[in-house]
Image (tube, rainbow, N blue to C red; front, top):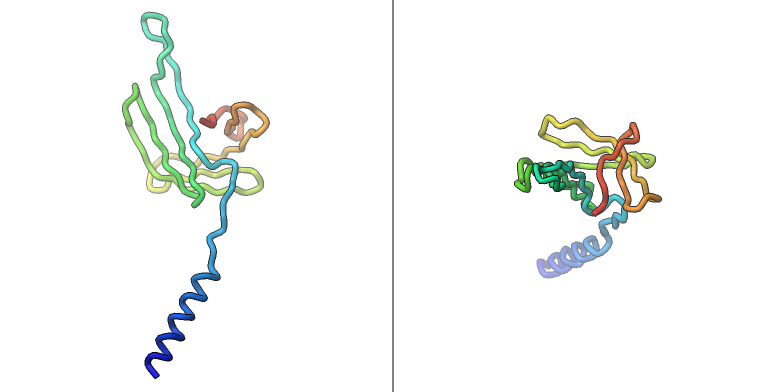
Length: 124
């Protein structure tokens, strides 16, 4: 009798695990986005003085990095969501304000724009 219940329990676990699937997220925001501030050195050459980077993954999470003079200054995880084409980026556990951006697909390279139309980030 114990064997029968064990076999039924095993069959039920296999059946349930085969029926559950994680939905695939193919959102166009997935990937790496960045924004760089360029400064000019005393020789007249352009150098990147500050760089921000957002890495969006398909689990509605991501990683934010901030670099100054090529060195990592700050990083944190963030959560993101989308509603009617408006993406909300929430930096949980930090004092950074939430960002609300839209994806500009027709431009090359693709960009994320803030609500006022200013550049937020560019796809890498």
